[in-house]
Image (cartoon, rainbow, N blue to C red):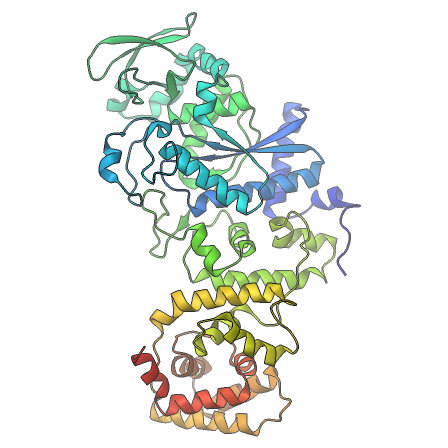
Length: 537
């Protein structure tokens, strides 16, 4: 039975090694040094809706939520999480993965909330992406407050902070100009005026600041005329690094993590925040996700896995587990990682009941579920379910259920909903990611002899033989065949019997598939039937 953590949670959390607790302690130390005793500690995640939300956005929210829960457990303090959308940013580039490119061309450089929605489902492209972001965050049950840059600028929420930026204009320029090339230095300003004629977010040269009037004067890049505009009321938008700093200052953000590609931006924004009289938030710089080719996942390219992709083949909890692991290490995010991560989730689940309080706080599942989960394990691994679905060519979960019921006893989808969910994922994965690429080969002459020997050994086993007994037979047959490396024996089994280069623990698979069916599988392989079936689709 799992132990109760509530009595001494703060004491244990103060020494926990898991990275969310390390981040929580760093934040607590920051607040102590500031003498900050405000009612709520503010966490923020930022999102640029210039393209469709991608899995990296989810990763930032789930990781921040883990740190937030660790902080609450460590300190007992109240917190808020803001998910901020920079939807007033200029629309600089048309994403590859959206329709109606020609129509969108007319909206280049306008605020994202002024760009027509190419999907036709929302008042603007920015709002379309905001809604998608909120929909998938809501589907995971995150507790957050959504905040729109457009609403903040137009509604006056940022007005006092914008006036403070104007007051410290020279100090901000001194921070930013050394980081820019000569050409950009000539036109750089923290303020991007919104053109009253075209509605575009202008990168214009500012020639005068009037702090008493709260205005700037700039050179219109189209007409060359001088124009004066207020920095408040949504008539200007701040350049990104200054905008980030202003937001930290205006909202009082205490914690925000960001990708490794933004390390320089964090440095400059932190300097600007201090120039405004604020304190930059604590946070971690996490490594980026890579696609199957090792390239950075991009909103505009739409490469890599989407949240929807993962949830077709694996559970939400497994996706959260993938996000938990080693945030400072770059990881390839492709379809092959899903089965492995699903199995890892249940391995961690199986350990919880025997772990003490200290060990439970180091278990990823405590951070994924914001506490100890109330879930049952699986009688078989997800990898075994995948291989079973592949061998029996499962077009329907009931086909897999028939085998699992024979193996595990009196169970069905109603009594084992978690297993039913995993079988559904396994069938989806087989149909989409395995079946199109399955390649059986004929056994070579020597391999055929070894397979016949394995079949004879399986036939000779006692009726009550389990997975370990069968595995011993598989292993012994390979040893008797005098393979220099037993991996070659198992590779033979995978390629000839399963039509793939890698596979499960064969003893466990044969036990799940059934001994009679497994013997028939060997016969079919030796007769060339598996190759013929694959050739005919």
